[in-house]
Length: 218
Image 1 (tube, rainbow, N blue to C red):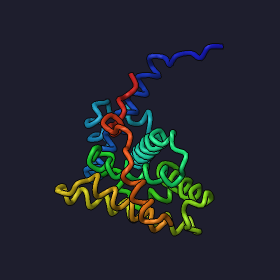
Image 2: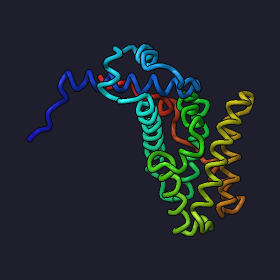
Image 3: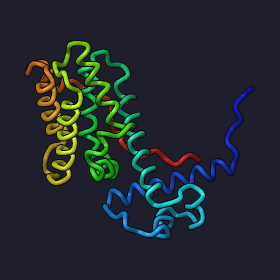
Image 4: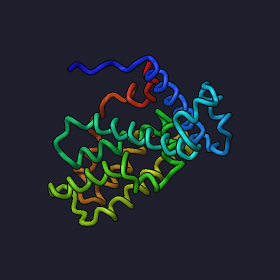
């Protein structure tokens, strides 16, 4: 049996939830989460009653907003590495793209930086993907690290520090800085200096359309 298209009511509910999540992400990015539910609904341009059709509390909304950001970014990184066979390059390309997103999508970047190290222990989004790529590279003999937990601490610190640096120093070249940090990470994880440099100078996919929030489903 053919799957039925969502009803008009279902589409409207989906649009409302998306608007609330986007409003919450903007508030998180601004560091302005101590607002009322009314202010959130006004920012989302939806009715106050609509909030409680989707979330019981502001905390539930903020959690959904962060999970949405993680899922978006994780799917983006996975989609940009599907044609790569070398797990070391998969890891490097994901990190290089992540670094560039701090400037290309500052709202998404600030949502991620707001939650800091918690993101790298989460069950979804960046953490499991980064661990997956590190462990795959280690199994393939590309990385020499033997402790994924320690590697994740190193990678998390580098990712968050890079984001903070790029926000605080708008004069820095984001691509050059990101690639240098990635190169240093690859060397720490076990690649030779020459190979780390080679991987970090390879061309990246087009990011011009990849670094934006998706539009609400009509």
